[in-house]
Amino acid sequence: MFDTVLFPIDQSRQAMETAAVALKLAQQHASTLVLLSVVEPGQDDPTAVAELLQQARARFDEAGVSCQVIEREGKPAFVIGDVADEINADVIVMGTRGIAIESDQQSTAARVIQLAPCPVLVVP
Image (cartoon, rainbow, N blue to C red; front, side, top):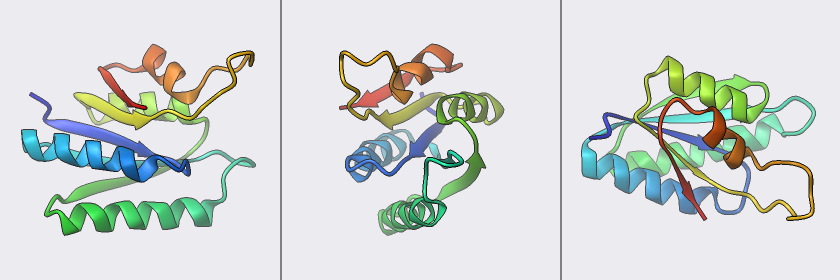
């Protein structure tokens, strides 16, 4: 059902918990797993993102699931949508970071849901 699973990873505390969901989904469907890191200039520490990417990849390798890695720079929601379209993703698995309800800002997950060319599984 899901030939290609896109897992955008970020620096949130729950990233590795979300990785477990992406891994399980990829295993259940014998999917190609694509790990995406997006560095937002001025917002993210590229070294920290690279380290997190390595940890996630090691976790997938330990579980016997190989993954393709894509690294991009830009606004996360837009890049995630673009990459999902480029790789013809069947589903995007991502976590959500808390944004204050009073805030006028939308979370990245909410934006991805609006922009994605495929279903988005948001892991709380």
